[in-house]
Image (tube, rainbow, N blue to C red):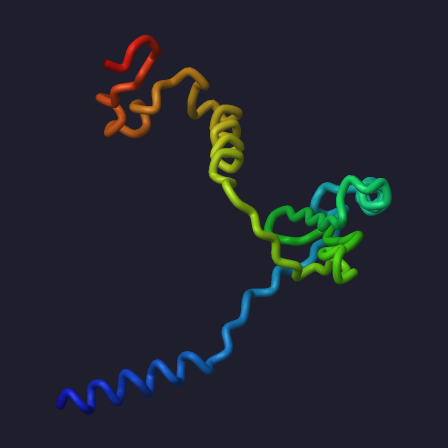
Length: 142
């Protein structure tokens, strides 16, 4: 195949893929009772979130509860942008920075609850490459 033909096919493929729509999979909604939730309990969430917005603690909130791959609660309250007075919507994007530590700590606590690790286990028990790591413990670094 000639160089020109290869480049032409690549350009054609790239153009096709750039115009091809990409869709996210829709997550199905489930019946709260079938998934172990009470409708009465879920009904208390929205007023509580609206109270946080009304008190000024948050400009806007979005709550989502899912279980076994099904959404059982998904609601918004307040504004996503106070300056332009835009309401919070279910598709609002949030800039969430530095989330590694909280996500990792939740994962560790889930493993702890399942009895798969102890909180005082050395990291090297699970990641052998950390066995010879030198850690500064105080005093002079010189």
